Image 1 (cartoon, rainbow, N blue to C red):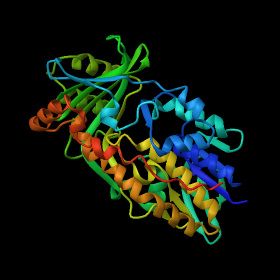
Image 2 (cartoon, rainbow, N blue to C red):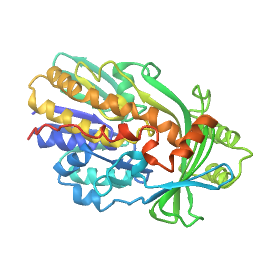
Image 3 (cartoon, rainbow, N blue to C red):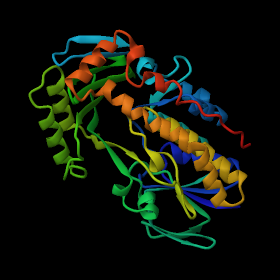
Image 4 (spheres, helix red, strand yellow):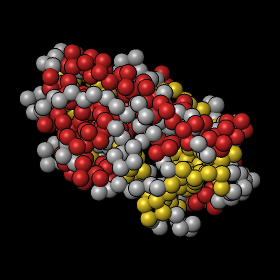
Amino acid sequence: MARVLVSGASVAGPTLAFWLRHHGFEVTVVEKAGAVRGGGYPIDIRGTAVEVVDRMGLLPRVAAKHIDTRRLTFVDIDGREVGTIRPEEVTGGVEGRDLELPRGDLTDVLYDAVRDRVDFRFGDSIAALTEHGTGVDVVFRGGDRATFDLVIGADGLHSGTRRLAFGPEADHLRHLGYCFAGFTMPNHLGLAHGGITWNTPGKAGVLYAAGASDRLHAFLTFSSPEPPAGAHRDPAAQRDLVAAEFAGHGWEIPRMVAAMRAADDLYFDVVSQIHLPAWSTGRVALVGDAAHAPSFLSGQGSSIALVGAYVLAGELATHADHTEAFAAYERGLRGFVERNQALATGGAPTLIPRTAEELRLRDAALADPSLLPGRTSREVTTALALADYA
């Protein structure tokens, strides 16, 4: 029985572990957090990804977590309503078919489906990889050592596995020209099943109610042609940078900035994608955001992670040679991934118009959502014919 180490226990990792175990592999999952991470902002499961969840037998549990967002409202710099639309008009999703749920709810369901059949190592990560003819020697940060037949990185945009096997992150990260801060705050507006987006050119403030809750997901996003120096790993610098970008604005922005400064769950990052010439090297491969993060502007990250994990496990089960399996995995998925990465280009003018003209065009299109940038392309990028590897 081939032994596989999977790094990361968010979406792609547990899904990959599920299908590898289904095909008879011995699986270990290592996760640097002390437990499966709960909470998190809402994510979408669309198109082919719904079919993957269904094949896992998890669709009823996932559907029960659906938060049913019903409306998205856009307001101008003074807080005056510009337009209100259904979320499907932005995402290109299918009402009644696609699902939306908090990321932590999805990871809980995935973990529960595989926890008793897979060895999970929480509070640890990979420190070193040494490949040889018959396997990969792994040194864990906790000090343990082990040998695996294959190692799969499912550890997200800032993948440590990718850095060890493919080189520095900077060689593969493509900055899309924005930074964002995400956090939660009290639902003082009484929002339910919807969100409000405030815009001025190059900036967006979003308040989002996942169902009916006393907490809001808040996002402050701004244009940044280059990644900000010195702020990536310094929380105080991140808070100062965001506050400076939104200084002097009205509506709910001052309250959001104050909440951002006080938040204990602040997440700050650049909006970026990962572009690699290949998703595998030797006995190490990548899946999900570690391989090809499309960014939140595409709205497809979690869906691609689910689909990619299913395809990778299936190809490893189908091919006796891992080199052939990795090649088939990439051959079958790369076009699908690249089409979905391209959605970020259409998503930016809708959510965060950079110029006054882009903002004017977006606001005019709210009266006829079929004219929203990227709307048409989104309808065809959630479909991929799935092989049956069973």
